[in-house]
Image 1 (cartoon, rainbow, N blue to C red):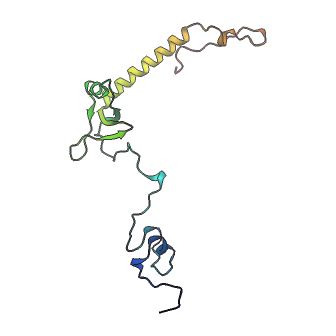
Image 2 (tube, one colour; image 1 turned 60 degrees about the vertical axis):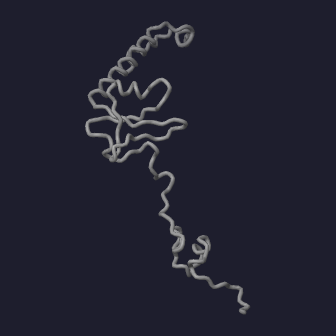
Length: 160
């Protein structure tokens, strides 16, 4: 029996945390030991996002969007508006978990997307003009700086 306080083990018997600090264990560092290999570390900020899809997944000439399942039939509405489900290389529609439901990746031809965006912007601008045409009660018009009347007026189209 030896009086030595050191134990001789092969590197395959040394736990990973000890092998990393043992200079005689082939200097494997963070990748692990020979008996317990680990994949290279991917930093948290550099990983893939849940809704990221590989380049080329959305067909050329189309625009993609994630639609959430809900009780009001959002997916059915999207299908009626010419949105189509995007499938992976195996033909399976691409979906992801989102809270307690799922989101579906769908695509539409760019011409229809541009039409929808123009309609949405027109409705937004019209609502801004209608809001600006309403008289203010109190607020800006009731403020009289240095006894002079307030001449500030917002254009009905803030984007013009």
